Image 1 (cartoon, chains in turn yellow, purple):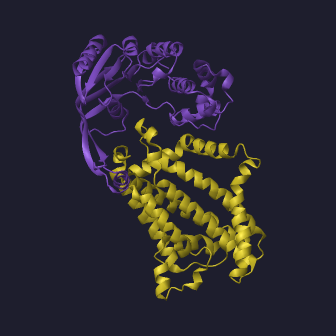
Image 2 (cartoon, rainbow over the protein chains, first blue to last red; image 1 turned 180 degrees about the horizontal axis):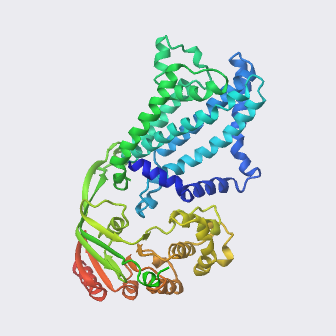
Image 3 (cartoon, rainbow over the protein chains, first blue to last red; image 1 turned 60 degrees about the vertical axis):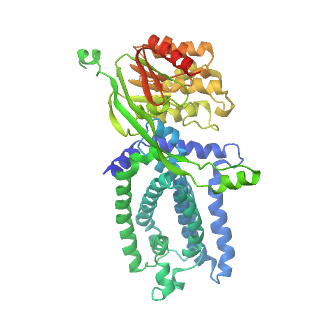
Length: 261
Length: 259
C-alpha cells in the first residue's frame, strides 16, 4: 500500500514537516508581547467566555455547559482547519513537488501538524476545565486517551482525500468551506445530541453527518455518558472505510498530482 | 571498512530515454474585448478548457559520472520541463528515466524559506527540506554561512536579505553535502561575479562536489565554463546533443535563423 508506506516514512522523518510548521508558528508570534501564549487565547476566550454566556441562554448550568461546548469546539476547530487547509496543500507546495519531493504525505502532514498543534493547546484548556469541573469524573477524562487517537486518525484520512481531490478539482476547497458553515450548526457543538432523538426524521437526517458521530464519540464518554450504539458503528465504519478509500485514491492518483497543480 | 570499496563508489548515471511529455493545460477562451465591459464580463464568465499540450517530444539525455551538461534553448523550449522529468516530479507520457545515485534539484531559489525566521533557522529549514537530519545540517551551518558570505547576518530575519544574498544562501545550503546528481535551473545569474566564480569552482570540483551536474541556462558563458556537454532544445525537441562548444554554436545559429 503506497499510502501506508509513504505515511509511515513521513512519520519517521519528521524533521521536514514538523520543524517547518513549528518555525512558522513561533515566528508568527515572535514580535508579539504574549508570544506563544497567543495560541492558547482563542480556546480560553471561546470555551470560558462563550461557554459562560451561552450556558445561560441554553438554560443550563455553567458547570454542565462549558465542558460540553469546550470539547465540541476544540474538536470541530481542529477538524475544519485541517480539512479546509488540505484543499490546496499540494498547490501551495508546488515548488517542493517540482523539485522531485514526491512523498505527498509530507505535505498533508504539514497542514495537519499546524492544526494539531492548535488542538494540543485547545485540549490543555479543555482538560483544565474538566479537572476543575465538579460534575466530571477523572476516570471519564481518561477515555480521551482512547477516543482522541481515533478521532485524529479520521481527520487525517479526510485531509488526505481532500488534498488529492483539491489538486485535481479546484472547486473542492470552496465546496468544503461552504458546507462547513452549515456543518457547525448541524453538529452538536452548541446543542445537545439528545434534542434530536434517533427515532425522529430529523434525528435520522442529523446522523448522516459524520461529525455528529465523531464528536459524540469523544465527548460523551469524557463527560461520563455512553454514546449511542449507532455512533460506535459509524465511527468504526468511517475509520476503516475512510482509510481504505484514501489508500485507493492515493495509490491510483498521487503520481498525477505534479501534472495537476 | 574495506578500502577498495570506498575507493570505488557506486557508479552514478542519469539517463532519459526518448521522453515525451504531455501536460494538461487550462486555456481561457479568447473573446472579443470590444468594450471595457465586455472585457470584464468575459474575464469573469469564460470557463477554461482543459487541453493536453506536448511539451517534450522524443528527448533523450545521457549523463555519466563526471558529466556537466548544459540545457540550452530559448524561453519555452522545454528546459524546465525536462528538469522536472529528471527530478522525478513529472511522470513522462512516453519513455523512461533511469537513475543511479541521489538527485538534488535546485530549481527554485527560495524553496522552503521562511521570511520571518532567522538565516540560521532557514539553514535548518532548507536542510530538512532536502532530507538531511537536523544535527547533520547544524554541523555544516558555519561553513554554509561562510560560503554565502553571511557570517554577520546569521541572526537576521531572512526577509531583510537581498535577492542576491538569498540566492547565495540557497546555493550554499543545497550544495553543502556531496551530491551525486545536481539539477539546476537558471538562477545563478543573480549572483555577482565573485559569487559566480565561487559557485563554478564548487560545481567543477569533482572530488567534493557533485558527480553529475545538469544546468539549464541562457548564460552561454556559464555553460561554456562549467559544462562539457550541451543539449539544445527547441519547441520540445532536441536540436543538438554533443559537446558544449558545438551546442553553443548551434544555439547561436538557431537564434540567428529566427530573428
